[in-house]
Length: 394
Ligand code: LMR
Image (tube, rainbow, N blue to C red):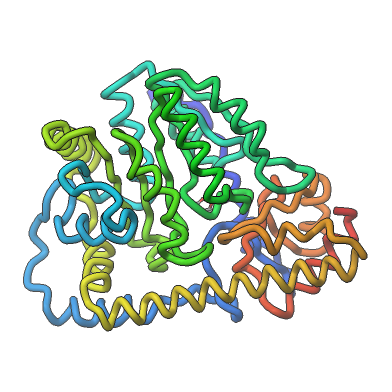
């Protein structure tokens, strides 16, 4: 039987982690996988997480099961963090999932249960795991234009032209903030226009929000998802705590689904529970419990927010330094986009040949589409990256 299996392609982002590890050179620079790193290259455990873990160790009295869709306290705290009251609670079904990937998978399975014919529209480009999971589930997908490789900004005209082709009942996957892999984002006016168009087409938004707090701030980064939640009768959200709480390996994500009325919400909630039961039964509790403790404790929450803000401002500082260094070396403003982009990533617009030259000649690792992880840089490595980019002709 097993000899019938096909060899699966390696995930390009995860493969890069290994290639970097295997490179013996000193001074190599890892701008690959989307994991936050401080100036020393470490991925620290956030202070509030450590404090909550200590408290949990002392206070936790059982490891018995929670609920199929996770702890109700976690759901409420996350609904508040992401939606901030943009939609009434009795229209929101929610389920804790193993990470943001688990949330995306669950939303797609829910869509498949409700409308197997729906086409899921993805931004071109998008996080490679989006099309990969859709393909795995055997669902229909299509792409809308998103990024202009020349200006490295959003191709908004192209996006709007393509969104007008979306059919009623189709689902449009949007990155709530900090677009992965490009770093280019819609402004508030553009989000309003996207909402108008999707409403006209009868399409449903599906928002993936994995970097809340990494762009312009916790509330600012949730503004788009809140705008949509206030206007659409039905929408889906997949959120992740991996990045903003720094708990990557604890697999802490959540699905939120907006239904038109409270009766439908009850049925949606039951479907989320059913799907979790088929996939893994109960979601892992540890990370979600820490998040809940932090969001419900004013002192822990304040400390978490302060540390998250340090992380955000640190990345913004690196963006500005890189843009300035590239301006100086290139004698032009063509790299100004680096300071305009938000979140962990920027797509630099290099060719695959240039990306490979950066890797082989300079020991600089980035994804093949020239996505860099800004947090992989520090003050010392920014000038090295800038010089290498100019050297290979970007
Ligand atoms: C990334 O895009 O690098 C992260 O979301 C990590 C991953 O799982 O790909």
